Image 1 (tube, rainbow, N blue to C red):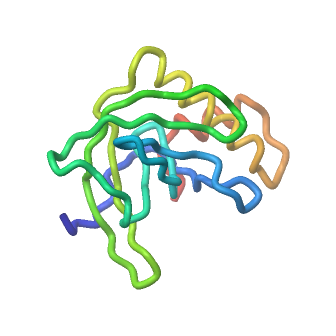
Image 2 (cartoon, rainbow, N blue to C red; image 1 turned 180 degrees about the vertical axis):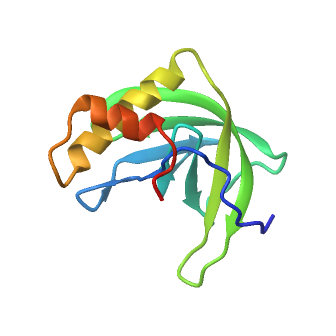
Length: 133
C-alpha cells in the first residue's frame, strides 16, 4: 500500500507531551510508540511489525496511566520518508467503552499541550470536531 491520501476526518494529535512519547500501541505483544492518534485511528513508524492478514488487534496505552483501550484496526496507507516512514491505521472497532475513554485521553492531552488557556469544553470540541489542518 503506498496511497498517502488522508482518510481521517477528525483532528489527529502528535503522540508527544513535552517531547516524550505519551501513547503506545501493543501489537502482537510488541510495544510501538504512536506517532499520532485520533478518534478514528493512529500512525506508527513504518518499521513496526504488523500481522500480514490486514486487520489486527491492538491495545493502546497512555503514559502514567494503567488504563488501556483494546481495539481492532487495519492499515490504510504507508508513507515513505528517508528519515523514517509512517503507517496509517484506522480503527474497525473499539471494545466496550473504548471510544469514550479515547475521547477522554485525547481531551486531557489537548488540555495538557495547549499553548493558550482553553476550557475542557473547548478541548472536547477540538477532539471530536473536524480536522483543523
